[in-house]
Image (cartoon, rainbow, N blue to C red):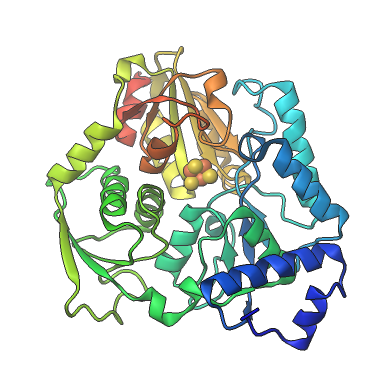
Length: 402
Ligand code: F3S
Protein backbone atom coordinates (compact mmCIF):
# COMPACT_ATOMS: atom_id res chain seq x y z
CA UNK A 1 0.00 0.00 0.00
CA UNK A 2 1.44 3.40 -1.05
CA UNK A 3 -1.38 5.70 0.01
CA UNK A 4 -0.67 7.25 3.39
CA UNK A 5 -3.67 6.77 5.69
CA UNK A 6 -4.46 8.51 8.95
CA UNK A 7 -5.14 6.40 12.03
CA UNK A 8 -8.89 6.81 11.56
CA UNK A 9 -8.67 5.80 7.88
CA UNK A 10 -6.64 2.74 8.81
CA UNK A 11 -9.28 1.79 11.36
CA UNK A 12 -12.02 2.04 8.74
CA UNK A 13 -9.90 -0.14 6.46
CA UNK A 14 -9.67 -2.59 9.33
CA UNK A 15 -13.46 -2.67 9.68
CA UNK A 16 -14.11 -0.26 12.57
CA UNK A 17 -17.23 1.16 10.88
CA UNK A 18 -18.50 -2.08 9.40
CA UNK A 19 -18.12 -3.96 6.14
CA UNK A 20 -19.80 -1.32 3.94
CA UNK A 21 -17.30 1.38 4.93
CA UNK A 22 -14.45 -1.12 4.81
CA UNK A 23 -15.23 -2.09 1.20
CA UNK A 24 -15.47 1.56 0.17
CA UNK A 25 -12.13 2.33 1.84
CA UNK A 26 -10.54 -0.65 0.10
CA UNK A 27 -11.72 0.69 -3.25
CA UNK A 28 -10.37 4.20 -2.60
CA UNK A 29 -7.01 2.83 -1.42
CA UNK A 30 -6.72 0.57 -4.49
CA UNK A 31 -7.41 3.52 -6.79
CA UNK A 32 -4.99 5.68 -4.88
CA UNK A 33 -2.29 3.02 -5.18
CA UNK A 34 -2.97 2.59 -8.88
CA UNK A 35 -2.67 6.30 -9.62
CA UNK A 36 0.10 7.09 -7.13
CA UNK A 37 -1.95 9.21 -4.70
CA UNK A 38 -0.17 10.31 -1.55
CA UNK A 39 -3.29 10.11 0.58
CA UNK A 40 -7.01 10.82 0.79
CA UNK A 41 -8.57 14.29 0.75
CA UNK A 42 -11.98 15.36 2.07
CA UNK A 43 -14.74 16.05 -0.46
CA UNK A 44 -17.70 18.35 0.06
CA UNK A 45 -20.15 16.43 -2.15
CA UNK A 46 -20.45 13.58 -4.62
CA UNK A 47 -22.42 12.62 -7.72
CA UNK A 48 -23.11 8.97 -8.46
CA UNK A 49 -23.85 7.28 -11.81
CA UNK A 50 -24.96 3.70 -12.34
CA UNK A 51 -28.59 4.51 -11.64
CA UNK A 52 -30.49 3.24 -14.68
CA UNK A 53 -31.52 -0.41 -14.70
CA UNK A 54 -30.64 -0.32 -18.41
CA UNK A 55 -26.97 0.20 -17.60
CA UNK A 56 -26.45 -1.72 -14.34
CA UNK A 57 -28.94 -4.60 -14.74
CA UNK A 58 -29.36 -7.26 -12.04
CA UNK A 59 -25.63 -7.49 -11.29
CA UNK A 60 -25.46 -3.80 -10.38
CA UNK A 61 -28.64 -3.95 -8.32
CA UNK A 62 -27.27 -6.97 -6.43
CA UNK A 63 -24.00 -5.11 -5.67
CA UNK A 64 -25.88 -2.04 -4.43
CA UNK A 65 -28.06 -4.21 -2.19
CA UNK A 66 -24.97 -5.87 -0.76
CA UNK A 67 -23.42 -2.46 -0.02
CA UNK A 68 -26.60 -1.21 1.66
CA UNK A 69 -26.89 -4.42 3.67
CA UNK A 70 -23.27 -3.99 4.76
CA UNK A 71 -24.13 -0.58 6.20
CA UNK A 72 -22.80 1.76 3.49
CA UNK A 73 -24.39 5.21 3.87
CA UNK A 74 -23.17 8.45 2.36
CA UNK A 75 -21.30 10.97 4.51
CA UNK A 76 -21.61 13.99 2.18
CA UNK A 77 -24.51 15.39 0.09
CA UNK A 78 -24.74 13.08 -2.92
CA UNK A 79 -26.83 13.42 -6.05
CA UNK A 80 -27.82 10.75 -8.56
CA UNK A 81 -27.49 10.57 -12.33
CA UNK A 82 -30.63 10.04 -14.45
CA UNK A 83 -32.42 6.73 -14.11
CA UNK A 84 -34.15 4.65 -16.79
CA UNK A 85 -37.60 6.21 -16.74
CA UNK A 86 -39.76 9.17 -15.85
CA UNK A 87 -41.66 8.27 -12.66
CA UNK A 88 -45.08 9.08 -14.13
CA UNK A 89 -44.71 8.83 -17.93
CA UNK A 90 -42.77 5.57 -18.15
CA UNK A 91 -45.42 3.62 -20.05
CA UNK A 92 -45.68 6.33 -22.65
CA UNK A 93 -41.88 6.15 -23.07
CA UNK A 94 -42.13 2.46 -23.96
CA UNK A 95 -40.75 1.26 -20.60
CA UNK A 96 -42.09 -2.12 -19.47
CA UNK A 97 -43.55 -2.84 -16.02
CA UNK A 98 -40.73 -5.28 -15.05
CA UNK A 99 -38.13 -2.62 -15.98
CA UNK A 100 -40.04 -0.01 -14.00
CA UNK A 101 -40.13 -2.32 -10.95
CA UNK A 102 -36.37 -2.96 -11.12
CA UNK A 103 -35.75 0.77 -11.49
CA UNK A 104 -37.85 1.44 -8.39
CA UNK A 105 -35.79 -1.17 -6.51
CA UNK A 106 -32.52 0.57 -7.47
CA UNK A 107 -33.81 3.94 -6.30
CA UNK A 108 -35.00 2.42 -3.01
CA UNK A 109 -31.50 1.10 -2.31
CA UNK A 110 -29.93 4.49 -3.06
CA UNK A 111 -32.49 6.16 -0.78
CA UNK A 112 -31.59 3.71 1.98
CA UNK A 113 -27.94 4.73 1.57
CA UNK A 114 -28.93 8.37 2.03
CA UNK A 115 -28.56 9.77 -1.51
CA UNK A 116 -30.70 12.71 -2.61
CA UNK A 117 -33.61 11.50 -4.73
CA UNK A 118 -33.13 13.91 -7.64
CA UNK A 119 -31.79 12.15 -10.72
CA UNK A 120 -29.99 14.58 -13.00
CA UNK A 121 -26.67 14.88 -14.82
CA UNK A 122 -26.65 18.64 -14.19
CA UNK A 123 -26.77 18.90 -10.39
CA UNK A 124 -24.92 22.23 -10.73
CA UNK A 125 -28.21 23.66 -12.10
CA UNK A 126 -30.17 22.87 -8.95
CA UNK A 127 -28.96 24.93 -6.07
CA UNK A 128 -25.43 26.07 -5.47
CA UNK A 129 -22.69 24.40 -7.52
CA UNK A 130 -19.32 23.67 -5.91
CA UNK A 131 -17.08 26.70 -5.42
CA UNK A 132 -13.76 27.31 -7.11
CA UNK A 133 -11.12 24.90 -5.80
CA UNK A 134 -13.64 22.70 -3.95
CA UNK A 135 -12.82 18.98 -4.07
CA UNK A 136 -15.71 16.72 -5.05
CA UNK A 137 -16.13 13.18 -6.44
CA UNK A 138 -18.29 13.06 -9.53
CA UNK A 139 -19.17 10.28 -11.88
CA UNK A 140 -20.95 11.36 -15.11
CA UNK A 141 -18.47 12.84 -17.53
CA UNK A 142 -20.71 15.80 -18.48
CA UNK A 143 -21.01 16.89 -14.86
CA UNK A 144 -17.35 16.25 -14.16
CA UNK A 145 -16.07 18.36 -17.07
CA UNK A 146 -18.44 21.25 -16.26
CA UNK A 147 -17.40 21.34 -12.60
CA UNK A 148 -13.70 21.28 -13.49
CA UNK A 149 -13.85 23.70 -16.41
CA UNK A 150 -16.68 26.17 -15.83
CA UNK A 151 -16.58 26.30 -12.01
CA UNK A 152 -12.93 25.48 -11.28
CA UNK A 153 -13.96 22.78 -8.80
CA UNK A 154 -11.83 19.62 -8.72
CA UNK A 155 -13.02 16.11 -9.54
CA UNK A 156 -11.74 13.09 -11.34
CA UNK A 157 -13.96 11.34 -13.82
CA UNK A 158 -15.14 8.77 -11.32
CA UNK A 159 -16.78 5.47 -12.12
CA UNK A 160 -20.05 4.56 -10.41
CA UNK A 161 -18.46 2.40 -7.65
CA UNK A 162 -15.64 4.85 -6.90
CA UNK A 163 -18.02 7.83 -6.71
CA UNK A 164 -20.21 5.90 -4.28
CA UNK A 165 -17.18 4.82 -2.24
CA UNK A 166 -16.01 8.44 -2.01
CA UNK A 167 -19.52 9.55 -1.01
CA UNK A 168 -19.59 6.98 1.80
CA UNK A 169 -16.13 7.77 3.15
CA UNK A 170 -16.45 11.51 2.47
CA UNK A 171 -12.99 11.47 0.90
CA UNK A 172 -11.28 10.61 -2.36
CA UNK A 173 -7.76 9.66 -3.38
CA UNK A 174 -5.60 12.68 -4.13
CA UNK A 175 -4.57 12.27 -7.77
CA UNK A 176 -5.47 13.43 -11.29
CA UNK A 177 -7.65 16.53 -11.48
CA UNK A 178 -7.22 17.23 -7.76
CA UNK A 179 -3.59 18.23 -8.37
CA UNK A 180 -2.43 21.55 -9.86
CA UNK A 181 0.03 19.95 -12.25
CA UNK A 182 -2.68 17.94 -14.05
CA UNK A 183 -4.86 20.98 -14.67
CA UNK A 184 -2.44 22.70 -17.02
CA UNK A 185 -3.30 23.23 -20.68
CA UNK A 186 -1.60 20.76 -23.03
CA UNK A 187 -3.01 21.81 -26.42
CA UNK A 188 -4.17 25.17 -27.80
CA UNK A 189 -7.32 24.99 -29.91
CA UNK A 190 -8.14 27.97 -32.15
CA UNK A 191 -11.78 27.92 -33.20
CA UNK A 192 -12.96 29.71 -36.33
CA UNK A 193 -16.67 30.15 -35.67
CA UNK A 194 -19.09 29.95 -38.63
CA UNK A 195 -20.44 33.29 -39.89
CA UNK A 196 -24.01 32.30 -39.04
CA UNK A 197 -24.29 30.98 -35.51
CA UNK A 198 -26.48 28.06 -34.34
CA UNK A 199 -26.90 26.60 -30.87
CA UNK A 200 -25.37 23.33 -32.11
CA UNK A 201 -22.05 25.03 -32.89
CA UNK A 202 -20.86 24.43 -29.34
CA UNK A 203 -21.67 20.71 -29.14
CA UNK A 204 -20.08 20.29 -32.58
CA UNK A 205 -16.93 22.12 -31.45
CA UNK A 206 -16.83 19.91 -28.35
CA UNK A 207 -17.17 16.75 -30.43
CA UNK A 208 -14.40 17.78 -32.85
CA UNK A 209 -12.05 18.79 -30.01
CA UNK A 210 -12.84 15.58 -28.13
CA UNK A 211 -12.04 13.43 -31.16
CA UNK A 212 -8.79 15.23 -31.91
CA UNK A 213 -7.26 15.75 -28.49
CA UNK A 214 -7.79 12.38 -26.78
CA UNK A 215 -8.41 13.53 -23.24
CA UNK A 216 -5.75 16.24 -23.10
CA UNK A 217 -6.44 19.51 -21.25
CA UNK A 218 -7.23 22.05 -23.96
CA UNK A 219 -6.98 25.84 -24.05
CA UNK A 220 -9.67 27.03 -26.43
CA UNK A 221 -9.55 30.43 -28.13
CA UNK A 222 -12.09 32.25 -30.27
CA UNK A 223 -15.24 31.52 -28.25
CA UNK A 224 -17.65 33.61 -26.18
CA UNK A 225 -19.83 30.89 -24.65
CA UNK A 226 -22.71 31.21 -22.22
CA UNK A 227 -23.03 28.66 -19.39
CA UNK A 228 -25.31 26.41 -21.47
CA UNK A 229 -22.77 26.44 -24.29
CA UNK A 230 -20.09 25.30 -21.85
CA UNK A 231 -22.45 22.58 -20.60
CA UNK A 232 -23.23 21.31 -24.10
CA UNK A 233 -19.70 21.67 -25.46
CA UNK A 234 -18.20 19.96 -22.42
CA UNK A 235 -20.67 17.06 -22.56
CA UNK A 236 -19.71 16.46 -26.20
CA UNK A 237 -15.97 16.81 -25.55
CA UNK A 238 -16.10 14.28 -22.72
CA UNK A 239 -18.08 11.81 -24.83
CA UNK A 240 -16.10 12.01 -28.09
CA UNK A 241 -12.78 12.10 -26.23
CA UNK A 242 -12.10 11.44 -22.59
CA UNK A 243 -11.55 15.02 -21.49
CA UNK A 244 -12.16 16.08 -17.89
CA UNK A 245 -11.10 19.73 -18.21
CA UNK A 246 -10.83 22.51 -20.77
CA UNK A 247 -10.03 26.20 -20.46
CA UNK A 248 -11.64 28.92 -22.56
CA UNK A 249 -9.64 32.10 -23.00
CA UNK A 250 -11.20 35.00 -21.12
CA UNK A 251 -14.07 32.87 -19.82
CA UNK A 252 -13.24 29.94 -17.54
CA UNK A 253 -11.72 30.54 -14.11
CA UNK A 254 -8.31 28.90 -14.59
CA UNK A 255 -7.69 30.15 -18.15
CA UNK A 256 -5.72 33.21 -17.13
CA UNK A 257 -3.07 31.30 -15.23
CA UNK A 258 -2.17 28.97 -18.14
CA UNK A 259 1.32 29.03 -19.62
CA UNK A 260 0.88 28.56 -23.37
CA UNK A 261 4.52 28.69 -24.38
CA UNK A 262 5.53 25.83 -26.67
CA UNK A 263 2.15 24.09 -26.68
CA UNK A 264 0.92 22.19 -29.72
CA UNK A 265 -1.78 24.12 -31.66
CA UNK A 266 -4.73 22.85 -33.63
CA UNK A 267 -7.52 24.70 -35.44
CA UNK A 268 -11.22 23.86 -35.61
CA UNK A 269 -13.00 25.42 -38.59
CA UNK A 270 -16.63 25.66 -39.63
CA UNK A 271 -15.82 23.05 -42.29
CA UNK A 272 -14.69 20.65 -39.51
CA UNK A 273 -17.95 21.27 -37.69
CA UNK A 274 -20.04 20.71 -40.82
CA UNK A 275 -18.10 17.51 -41.49
CA UNK A 276 -18.73 16.29 -37.94
CA UNK A 277 -22.42 17.05 -38.30
CA UNK A 278 -22.56 15.02 -41.55
CA UNK A 279 -20.78 12.10 -39.91
CA UNK A 280 -23.21 12.08 -36.99
CA UNK A 281 -26.28 12.01 -39.25
CA UNK A 282 -27.41 8.81 -40.95
CA UNK A 283 -31.15 9.46 -41.26
CA UNK A 284 -33.44 12.06 -42.86
CA UNK A 285 -35.40 14.46 -40.65
CA UNK A 286 -38.63 13.38 -42.35
CA UNK A 287 -38.08 9.82 -41.13
CA UNK A 288 -37.50 10.45 -37.42
CA UNK A 289 -40.01 9.05 -34.90
CA UNK A 290 -38.53 10.84 -31.88
CA UNK A 291 -36.99 14.26 -31.28
CA UNK A 292 -35.07 14.31 -28.00
CA UNK A 293 -33.71 17.39 -26.25
CA UNK A 294 -31.82 17.61 -22.98
CA UNK A 295 -28.45 15.89 -23.09
CA UNK A 296 -27.02 17.11 -20.77
CA UNK A 297 -30.28 17.91 -18.94
CA UNK A 298 -31.96 21.15 -19.99
CA UNK A 299 -31.36 24.30 -17.99
CA UNK A 300 -34.14 26.74 -17.08
CA UNK A 301 -32.84 29.14 -19.76
CA UNK A 302 -33.00 26.46 -22.48
CA UNK A 303 -36.57 25.55 -21.49
CA UNK A 304 -37.62 29.21 -21.45
CA UNK A 305 -36.10 29.70 -24.93
CA UNK A 306 -37.86 26.67 -26.38
CA UNK A 307 -41.19 27.61 -24.79
CA UNK A 308 -40.77 31.13 -26.20
CA UNK A 309 -40.24 29.68 -29.68
CA UNK A 310 -43.22 27.31 -29.45
CA UNK A 311 -45.72 29.72 -27.89
CA UNK A 312 -48.30 30.72 -30.49
CA UNK A 313 -47.45 27.81 -32.77
CA UNK A 314 -49.46 24.63 -33.38
CA UNK A 315 -48.43 21.00 -33.35
CA UNK A 316 -47.94 19.21 -36.66
CA UNK A 317 -46.66 15.64 -37.24
CA UNK A 318 -48.32 14.13 -34.14
CA UNK A 319 -46.73 10.78 -35.04
CA UNK A 320 -43.32 12.17 -33.99
CA UNK A 321 -42.73 12.03 -30.23
CA UNK A 322 -40.78 14.86 -28.64
CA UNK A 323 -38.98 14.58 -25.29
CA UNK A 324 -37.54 17.38 -23.19
CA UNK A 325 -35.33 15.87 -20.46
CA UNK A 326 -34.50 17.89 -17.37
CA UNK A 327 -34.40 17.63 -13.60
CA UNK A 328 -37.61 17.75 -11.62
CA UNK A 329 -36.30 20.78 -9.75
CA UNK A 330 -35.95 22.78 -12.97
CA UNK A 331 -39.22 21.45 -14.42
CA UNK A 332 -41.21 22.29 -11.29
CA UNK A 333 -39.82 25.81 -11.20
CA UNK A 334 -41.17 26.55 -14.71
CA UNK A 335 -44.87 25.66 -14.68
CA UNK A 336 -45.90 27.99 -17.52
CA UNK A 337 -43.05 27.00 -19.81
CA UNK A 338 -43.41 23.27 -19.22
CA UNK A 339 -47.13 23.55 -19.99
CA UNK A 340 -46.23 25.07 -23.36
CA UNK A 341 -43.70 22.31 -24.08
CA UNK A 342 -46.27 19.69 -23.07
CA UNK A 343 -48.54 20.83 -25.92
CA UNK A 344 -45.87 19.58 -28.31
CA UNK A 345 -44.21 16.68 -26.50
CA UNK A 346 -43.38 15.40 -23.04
CA UNK A 347 -41.26 17.02 -20.35
CA UNK A 348 -39.43 14.07 -18.75
CA UNK A 349 -37.74 14.22 -15.37
CA UNK A 350 -35.22 11.95 -13.64
CA UNK A 351 -34.29 10.27 -16.95
CA UNK A 352 -32.88 10.85 -20.43
CA UNK A 353 -32.99 9.46 -23.95
CA UNK A 354 -29.70 7.58 -23.54
CA UNK A 355 -30.33 5.66 -20.31
CA UNK A 356 -33.96 4.69 -20.99
CA UNK A 357 -34.74 1.69 -23.23
CA UNK A 358 -35.55 4.04 -26.11
CA UNK A 359 -35.36 1.18 -28.60
CA UNK A 360 -38.61 -0.30 -27.23
CA UNK A 361 -40.54 2.37 -29.09
CA UNK A 362 -38.18 4.30 -31.36
CA UNK A 363 -35.76 3.60 -34.17
CA UNK A 364 -34.79 7.01 -35.59
CA UNK A 365 -34.05 9.95 -33.32
CA UNK A 366 -33.37 13.61 -34.05
CA UNK A 367 -30.94 15.29 -31.65
CA UNK A 368 -29.27 18.62 -30.98
CA UNK A 369 -26.82 16.94 -28.58
CA UNK A 370 -23.46 15.66 -29.80
CA UNK A 371 -23.10 13.64 -26.60
CA UNK A 372 -26.38 11.80 -27.25
CA UNK A 373 -25.32 11.38 -30.90
CA UNK A 374 -22.22 9.57 -29.64
CA UNK A 375 -24.12 7.06 -27.51
CA UNK A 376 -27.52 6.50 -29.10
CA UNK A 377 -26.35 4.72 -32.29
CA UNK A 378 -24.56 2.10 -30.17
CA UNK A 379 -26.15 -1.26 -29.46
CA UNK A 380 -26.93 -1.26 -25.76
CA UNK A 381 -27.75 2.45 -25.86
CA UNK A 382 -30.65 2.28 -28.28
CA UNK A 383 -29.13 1.40 -31.68
CA UNK A 384 -30.78 4.49 -33.13
CA UNK A 385 -30.32 6.08 -36.51
CA UNK A 386 -29.65 9.78 -35.97
CA UNK A 387 -30.56 13.11 -37.49
CA UNK A 388 -28.50 15.92 -35.98
CA UNK A 389 -29.98 19.42 -36.23
CA UNK A 390 -30.32 22.76 -34.49
CA UNK A 391 -32.97 23.31 -31.84
CA UNK A 392 -34.91 25.67 -34.07
CA UNK A 393 -34.85 23.26 -37.00
CA UNK A 394 -36.12 20.38 -34.86
CA UNK A 395 -38.84 22.43 -33.16
CA UNK A 396 -39.95 23.75 -36.56
CA UNK A 397 -40.27 20.19 -37.82
CA UNK A 398 -43.16 19.51 -35.42
CA UNK A 399 -44.75 22.96 -35.20
CA UNK A 400 -45.87 25.82 -37.37
CA UNK A 401 -47.23 29.33 -36.76
CA UNK A 402 -51.00 29.32 -36.11
FE1 F3S B 1 -27.17 13.42 -19.06
FE2 F3S B 1 -28.18 11.31 -20.19
FE3 F3S B 1 -26.79 13.00 -21.59
S1 F3S B 1 -27.22 11.37 -18.26
S2 F3S B 1 -25.34 13.91 -20.20
S3 F3S B 1 -28.75 13.42 -20.59
S4 F3S B 1 -26.58 10.81 -21.64
